[in-house]
Length: 252
Ligand SMILES: C[S@@+](CC[C@H](N)C(=O)[O-])C[C@H]1O[C@@H](n2cnc3c(N)ncnc32)[C@H](O)[C@@H]1O
Image (cartoon, rainbow, N blue to C red):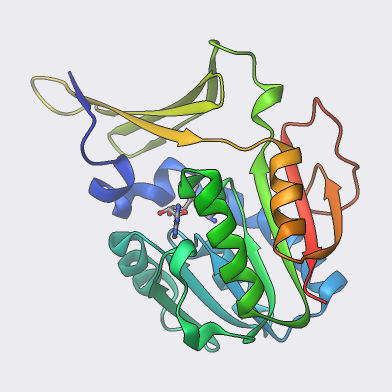
């Protein structure tokens, strides 16, 4: 067994991300969420910030929205292109939230940053830089939809299973552990056909932000009409015990 601290699972096994997250199953439920967001905001263009292997970006593109997916991970962008590069209205590009290209200025009706991708910025200073980039990249009247983990709802110090999946001979297990504001995501990868048994454990460390920190940073960035929900259907109000925090915020 080896605990890999240097490279993340996502860098080494980007080509297995869809198996780890059970993308083919998730696609069905996620499509309903994206269709709802499209119905509410009626975007003609969208930036999917933290697109990973491109599932969310593809759901927008398939619905006729001009969609761009960005991710800091080049292997993820490569997978996105392989998965969905043949769709119309779609493009992928390696980019970092904190330093978005000037070419993005006032380009998008909608920006989505889902599945706690924003925690990848690592600090409040970088959160502010990322929000400024999102703000500049939106057209006036455009909306940011942010989905993040409400880490306070996770008991401190407790290991929490996220999901176990299997693809052919590979079994994946994911679980999380919160230590104060730090969240650790563990990914175990077991090759059941290897002899001797090949088992790898990856630990990913994230800095989380409180709802108050996120909202105040959005306000400082000049975002308006900031609303909090606990689901991507934007139906359920956010409460302290909600697992997810979903925020919508508008560029006026
Ligand atoms: C948990 S995945 C979410 C993927 C996708 N949005 C989904 O819903 O399945 C988070 C992604 O965000 C990317 N990411 C994290 N921090 C980033 C940053 N500062 N700039 C660009 N991409 C980032 C990671 O490389 C990773 O692919």
